Length: 151
Image 1 (tube, rainbow, N blue to C red):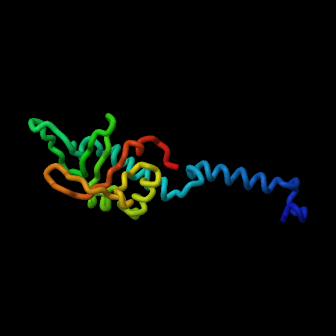
Image 2 (tube, one colour):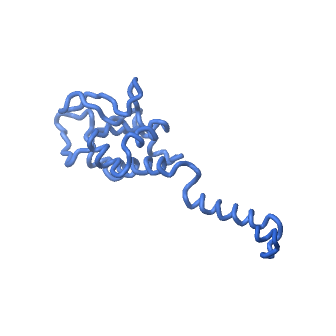
Image 3 (cartoon, helix red, strand yellow):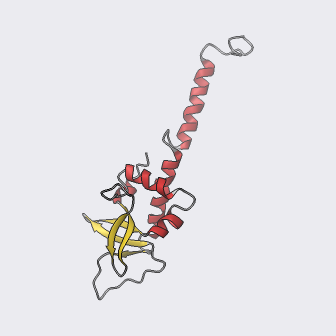
């Protein structure tokens, strides 16, 4: 408006170009047009598994002679097509992995991206028979969480 009234010496369309350039820089810095909460959900679960994948997850199947000592267990892992899937215990999912986020929303986001297995009814946790624990519900995070595609 200031340019149209000749208060500012800008050529026609210059303000729109400047605004579009600034918006693009902001959007690039933000990480894209998708919901920031969705990116945060994926990043949070990925970071937890990257930090604790070997130390806090017990194998679903192990040699009787080799019983790993897992301190502060977060869950279990299983091999699927030579890659690890992580089975996260419900309290760890809610209190640690999703701390500060809505755990159900995190499940929804990951499931929609194929990063979390769901049961036949579409629930985000799956009933599994766990070593030493019996039947329990777990959140099964697939290996695609490491694919890097947050959108």
